[in-house]
Length: 281
Ligand SMILES: NC(=O)c1ccc[n+]([C@@H]2O[C@H](COP(=O)([O-])OP(=O)(O)OC[C@H]3O[C@@H](n4cnc5c(N)ncnc54)[C@H](OP(=O)(O)O)[C@@H]3O)[C@@H](O)[C@H]2O)c1
Image (cartoon, rainbow, N blue to C red; front, side, top):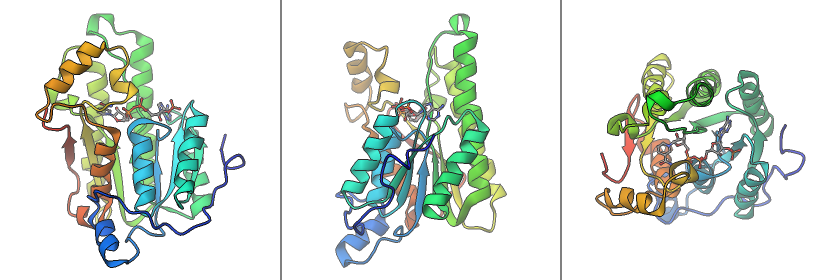
């Protein structure tokens, strides 16, 4: 189901808001020179952007001038809220409900994006879930769902991105710093995230000659429900204390790093895994 009928799709104002701490240097330049950002007129699709890192990324890319397609599985109200926020600051956005574990839903997600905005320049494959248990206790249901959403779902998203992203675009798949930390109970989840690093590296090569850069973004210890659910305040404080900056990451920290990869200055970073974890690894 699409939110297009319930939420106005098109903005009424041109985008003028710029990032205060613009890692996207194209945007920073525009701020100082009054020029339009290079991303103006471009389109970004961010899966799993009703909340957490995906929502922060959708907001950030909208601020940088992208029209944005927001996606959710369950939380339609939150997705609609992200769209309203973007529109309130003069951006353009739609939201589309689509479960990324369903390949036909992923196809529909891209089709609805194209109907609204005419094409896609940036795809962020961010939708993901985490179920933790030692090997001996991991249930079939939790293991299957993680593989379905994280490993298969991201594959379906990257496959559509490979078919549709315009020349000069960017594709980013969300891995995790757990692929380096390798902590107990994270085995099944970490494997689905390691897949993103391989996807990005191989897809970057397949898209040769088109100036499309494909990377994996590997956050760590980010303050979202995915990370905090099931942990006590003491455990969370303990994780924060392990980072050199003595805090958890915020979704905006990751959105800023993704925006940097999406900027013109990110073009030469291709086929890599970029770790954004405040130095915890
Ligand atoms: N937080 C961290 O510390 C951390 C660290 C490393 C990597 N990551 C990765 O970063 C990504 C985002 O994580 P987060 O912390 O922002 O998680 P989050 O706050 O739990 O948000 C997850 C988002 O994914 C969506 N989603 C879940 N299953 C989906 C499905 N089947 N189809 C479409 N959308 C789906 C959710 O939509 P609904 O609202 O509709 O459920 C929500 O928008 C994940 O891939 C995660 O593995 C996170």
